[in-house]
Length: 423
Image (tube, rainbow, N blue to C red):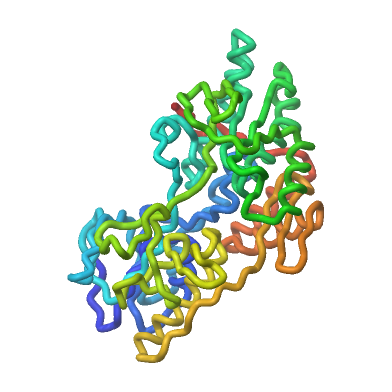
């Protein structure tokens, strides 16, 4: 892998997500050699993926080159590779481009889409975990508009204009709101030969309310916002089968749709090689202690979504969102430096900064510890937090410009079919 030999301890980080990026920053120009490995050469700001899917943002505004993050770190290296196996007894990993030894290994591989074993849905639905997947959804939505404009029958047109989103967590709710804004603001102007009333957005949720992880207050407000935008909400509804055109559910509801977007859950993305008892089955997350050490290992750590750190407040582990990953990454960086210097480690304590979701223009909900609110102010808070959380000044400027342009013109300027999607 052409990593130079060094007398410094070698820290290998697998994954350039929120946890991995914060770890790399913590090791900047310290007395360690850092090797960051990822199968993509960029960090993705996943909370805004849905805006790429709905033509609100271009992908380069939410992606940031990993090499740019470490360009001033003299002892840090990046390799574009897929890690295939860990050999803990040899302190070595096997990747798609070769083997690499380590002194300390940190797994920050995050999650992947969870289809709950349903192969039909896996093969026919649209996931949204990566930038390429978001671009696929964008292309498919726009292609469906074009096909609907030349459809021969009403049934065919209905299938192209029916959009089904499964999972009413923050991702599903935000995407439903964004697609509804396409219907209300873009369809009447760009596709004058289509009737906007023929387009329907269906949001399916297995629980009895939307935004199950958030408060009842946020859930009720979000439902009102969605219904005002014209989104049809189906609670206590599970998808049993989807063949690419027909959505079959656990109720009498049956939908004809060319587009089913799967936002119903995630599962961990572990790597082969560690003992089975280190991995919690079902969740596919590594069992870690309060220092993020994987059970049974002193020099292998897991952080972020792939780590399950049980505590009194979080018996099932921390929520799989950005903040735990960021906080764990920052602390583990400091702890590893303390470990190298033979100093005691500091246990991790999660500081819950609240949760939020946006439903569209001037519509959002925010849950803080002692205060819950929604509407325009929540929307403004949501925008500010996400803008400041982006990696890179350029990305912040581009996103702010796009949001300002979209707000003034009721427009989504990135509605381009650059790479046509084929089912």
